[in-house]
Image 1 (cartoon, rainbow, N blue to C red):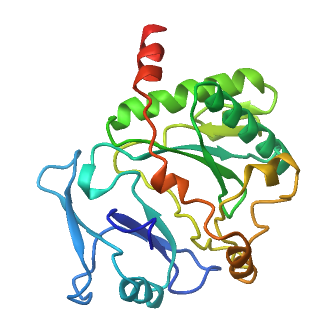
Image 2 (cartoon, helix red, strand yellow):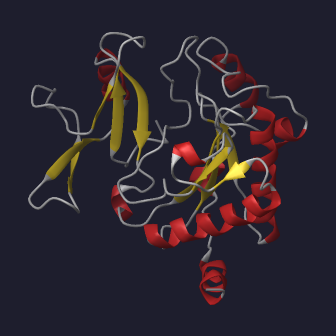
Length: 263
């Protein structure tokens, strides 16, 4: 709940099960219950278009969404308190067909080290599908464009370290099967699967926060190691190891200034 409250949310619904095609939903349905809270967001591309985003402010809303066959939950990078200024950035490591998960872990450690060199702390989680996401919590002082430029800069550095296994190529058919370093997800209106969100795959994998030592010691074998049947035990043993994303908000102004100076 704490990773959803206060944020517009997009859902992926599978009313016929995960083996049938699902669909994304942004707008609150007209037949929805009156007690579900919503938040209007005006479109930046279409005049007079307003989306009534669902706000997951209580357990009842979450249960209702489950009854609507909502499996994936995708919150915005920003809250309604500062909708134009994200309070976290994400390095989305998306492996292609020639990539291994061990290579993904290797690249994530490079990103961690690059950010550590400038005094920043980041937090990894599995995507619950094939990849990994590294979150960088931020003070909500920077525009989406600034955050995207920041992530792009460090993705370029990571690519320079691992040119043989990573790519920044946007077109899928030109990625040569490498790990795509997706910085473009850091944009206004974009979303990403929430921590602890289920994914619509066999076995019901869960997007699960990781400890860096688990990555360093190669204790994680795939992005689907954690699922609906073992996530409860992990939470009992580890607690919520992702809370730093909500509490450890960081300042990147001086780094942004240096990035701009290099242009």
